[in-house]
Amino acid sequence: MKLTKYIFTVILFLIQSCSNNTKVAEEKGIHLKSAPCRKSWEMFGGSKDTINVTDCHNLKQGRWIITRFVVLNKKNGPEMIWSQEGNYSNGKRNGFWKNYDDKGNVKDSVYYKNDTIVDL
Image 1: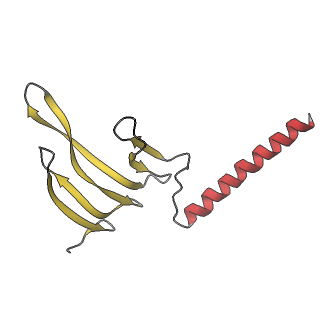
Image 2: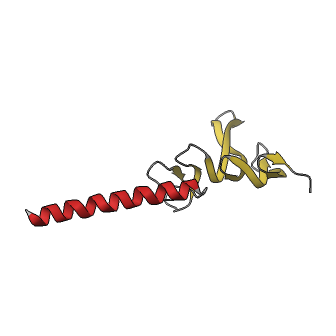
Image 3: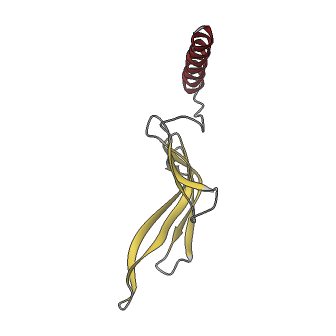
């Protein structure tokens, strides 16, 4: 019985510690990768790389790939292709973003800082 109480107490302590660390990190603008409400999608099946991540505040974070459907061949029907690729930080586009044409070639590249296009 004492062992069960001890284990229960330790588990509660660990849960509380993790909860406090998450709050402190988020107050400082740090978004933890291990946050339970973080959502992401695996890229290319079995790879460990993830794309299109949203954090606990539903803000976009990290690498994002935006896709669209186009009909390249009437026999095959619509195909999903990349439309844009770039990085988000706290819900805002930052850095270089690539725009793709219907054949998957890079059309152009635009530099963003806090969701605003910057001329270089």
